Image 1 (spheres, rainbow, N blue to C red):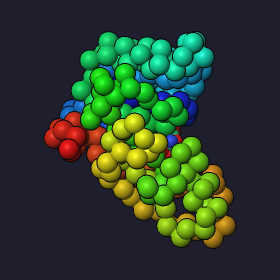
Image 2: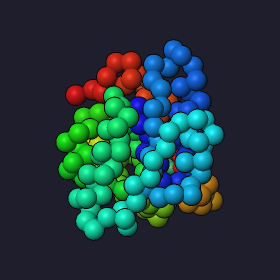
Image 3: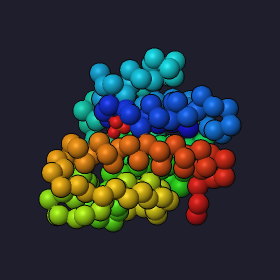
Image 4: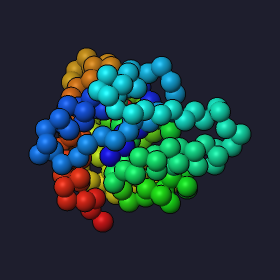
Length: 189
Ligand code: GRF
């Protein structure tokens, strides 16, 4: 699999750790990012995994970026692509190449609170339960078919950070459990 990241990469780390076990069924052949200098890339480098960066600002159009990202992923011939905190929408070229075998993890119970601020929006709305969702990526914003969800109660006094950190604990567990399963059994259709 390829893992795409934009930030800290704790979900990536969980996948790196899980894939040390040969029974996991998947290995990480490359880690890509839309920006350099992030901890997610450093984690991959420490683990000896090849990395690549495809920055949107290096291209004249979003379509050209999308094609370059697709080509960079394709070089590694992945069976599965995992977006783990990758903060960009992939485009048509990417979906043409990897549609149906690209999954994303999101820190809310979709279809509630899609977009870049799941924990903040859940807290602002006053929901009592939120969580994380693993889904198959399509052209929508966090709209593809849902594979798995885990619930996290919102606690009195939660801040965006405390809530997001608690979500991330169960999110990492969900991601590793399901990515192993998807690698062994395929993405559900
Ligand atoms: C995760 O909660 C992910 O769902 C969201 O951003 C967070 C990324 O965390 N989009 P990390 O970079 O894997 O630590």
